[in-house]
Image 1 (cartoon, rainbow, N blue to C red):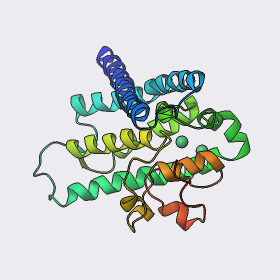
Image 2: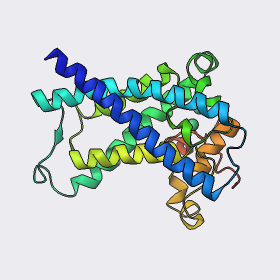
Image 3: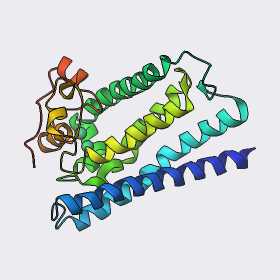
Length: 238
Ligand SMILES: [Zn+2]
Ligand SMILES: [Zn+2]
């Protein structure tokens, strides 16, 4: 039994690491095609970003692997696979709930990480990417990685979610984590500057966090930033 937990933790670590390498690699390649030279001279920084990200993969993989094992073996968690278990309208609602709750956790822990003591210990690693690249998606100090790694494995014990919606949550998390750091905006201006875009976080918003540090702390939505007066709007397009 214990061997099965360890296998699950190792397998999940490998999955997270490969997912990172595939997603960051794909958007780094897209960057080299659409913005040639944007990462020129950033080789040493990119190697550090990959190193921290692969260490973070283990910190994300272990709790996820343990919970996945418990789900399979003991029916832990409120993850369900039967399409009829909840009404269909609950599918998009559960997706939104997961994103909003993760965003809320991220906003407040991120603000704490910007207090000077915590910043030096646990968050300076992430901001050492100046400017960040597509490889910085998981470039976190282990303490910061731990604060991020526990969110979804904890939520699945409380908020019911279909396994397909959970897959979508993880996909959105991965894609936005990479694209928010890649240094250019991939979404059309018509969306970014729309009413809906005013509430969503994309590269133009998070780039400004990396430029100016003390603003734009959110993950997916601008809700908390707007409510708390920390939203400074978008970075200049590049
Ligand atoms: Zn960042
Ligand atoms: Zn920060």
